[in-house]
Length: 519
Image (cartoon, rainbow, N blue to C red):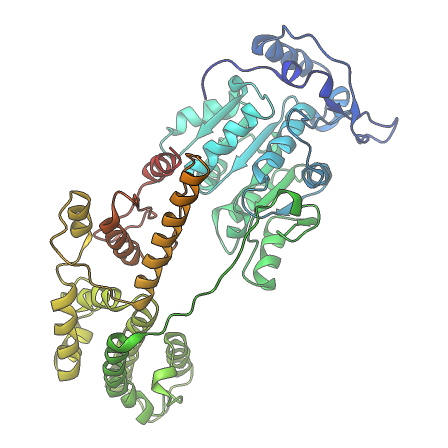
């Protein structure tokens, strides 16, 4: 964030929305129009005005009656009714805002933060997000949308020294940070907890168990209960129980929920057409699947014979069902199974769980993903010595593994890089029929788009986003599409993870990749 910025007064002019409080009620009325203010004000004057307001008698609990007689909502952008309604609601009740991605949660947070910043001249407004890019995004919104002076804001991360963070807590009023930093500073007493008047929680669905968000709220209420919480999430929880945990942990009193089908959201939602394509496994993958099922039967039958695995339909068993059976065995072991027998059964459960994970990879992602998983067992990188020994003694498994190795052992991330350098000598192997279908869909899209752009004399480019659950699959898709340069330009984007040969992108690299894809 650099460069000079027009103040609220300059930007909004006569479009400033204000609300005046009723006498004796202490709460703002509905927004009303205000007269235009001078256009020559700059940020220095705005800061001076805030500092002068700060010298007024703040009243009980730091609340400024003069500032609190109204609340401000920006109208320099088209006013969306749902954003206005949610902002009003969030000012006066701890609110969980559930909005689809891209519909203005950041904007709503900026409005709420700005009004508490005005109402409590000596208070602190805190925004928390689990990643640095989200923290930076909100800080920019508060500056560009609401005009909070940069000199009153600060971003803190774990790399900020503790002694410097204590000084920032003392001198700045609007803080942007990750929850871990907030927990650490609360624990060591660096946070003036009684001065925190507004706490915004982004990605609020993470507020489960002992996650840092929960720790922050628990610590704050030890000092004060006079602060507002605004929680933001596109997906508040996987089930009712999870949502209730979020509501409880964040002291939520009201939920503002909108879906893409909500009447007040529809005018701002992009049109979307969903088409489901079902791709059969095909002969080659079907043959591999049949062989793999025979291997599963060999190792799962032992558990079935011991009566610790009740379901006998091997092809339709799932990894999750085996995990449940193992947990049940641990809770209620048979009195006939003791000592070394328990260890043997635990080992058999572990091997079957791994094999069924591979089975899911084979069906969902294809032969290449299966090979990479199995090679991790066989080369020892996964540390599963017993499983490797058991599998090595199985003739069917070794034949299958050798077949997959001959087809996919050379295929790796380095080969994708080779494609990027122009090396196309190696023929790409389609490890799943849906890859071929994906290739057809992508090529058809760009062919029709280019034809349309030529006919209509438009130079707009088209972008395609492909999501996959595993990074190995991402690299495989990229390698496949790189064969079609320059018609298709490919850029991979994978999250950061530890403990892997390919660690993925750091948050800084993710941001750089995203910006490149938009250029």
